[in-house]
Image (cartoon, rainbow, N blue to C red):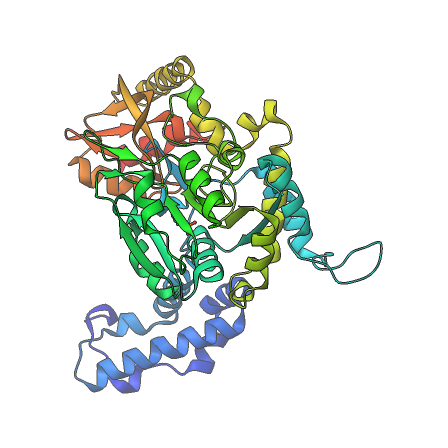
Length: 469
Ligand SMILES: *Cc1c(COP(=O)(O)O)cnc(C)c1O
């Protein structure tokens, strides 16, 4: 009988110090560091000890220096495995919330990393040497780009809505259409947000029709603001009517009540030319006269997670003085990313190329068809049959429901095993690839591929095909 099949007893368990000094552990210590290796070895030995005490079956071969080094190496690899791994998004959903929404502009990330690894003049005015606002530059750029009088920024748009409601209408009434009682996802439901912000929701109109007069009739002495919410993630069609922002602005001015628009996705540029008609642009809404507009930084704007608030100066000042503002303020990395993303908008001819979200929206049908065909040709060289088909991409991220962009996709019917199994191999590969499954086939949309990812995608699909399970 050799060691491999011999059952071990407690006496066979090696000592920690001896193991750490052994040759198989030397390489491990060199790469992962002595402290981490010692901790993980101690934990592994403890588990084995418990196992042996409780009469578990452990072979002597599992207790050699080599075997234990391999075990500890595995534990450390599991610990250090990236949780947020890099993903190739071939789903065609441009703002995929589960895949991190907007991929950031590379130049903005580069600049932000440089600024945040060193000290920066985050809250100092260089000329006077005095304390200044941390969001000063971002706000100057935001007002310039949106045409608003003033601007500020918090951690996300949910926070923006919350702080606006609390600032303008705590203890007061907020008339809001029954069509705008939205749930964005998770725990963000408009009626709950209103309650938490200390406002009293006054439901007006019906699910499908709310008239301007419904708002007007709901105004009392105790009204804090009128709220319009963009129905970002659903559309009501048919016998419908929604009071226009212009009408609310007129009522608000006449009755001296601020009008706020929670826009959600919020595009700076007009997307109508790309067939997206349900997303009014921020400058358009500011021009219409909304007193405050808030929107996300990581949706159509294409930057970091943030809640951008633009509008009337006196109201923005009040928001900034709210005690909640400190709890919602952005960190220096976010502010830097925002600053450098905003600067890209200063060059409208280039912004469609430099902001990945906009690039994906603006990609043309012809170019996508060529891209899909090119991928199919390359896959064929790897022995993989892929068809090219007309299809549609989605904006996603809870924006523009029902509005789809034409695209050409790559359809693979066979990649070894079931489509679910193949999709799983692709997700678990390096790089991780996410695609769609439709009609029992794997579907890859080139629209959401970033420059330079074509070759990686071909290699990933090919290795998923070879790793049949
Ligand atoms: C997405 C969205 C929000 C939440 O924005 P986050 O930036 O994700 O916090 C709020 N309101 C509307 C209408 C939205 O579409």
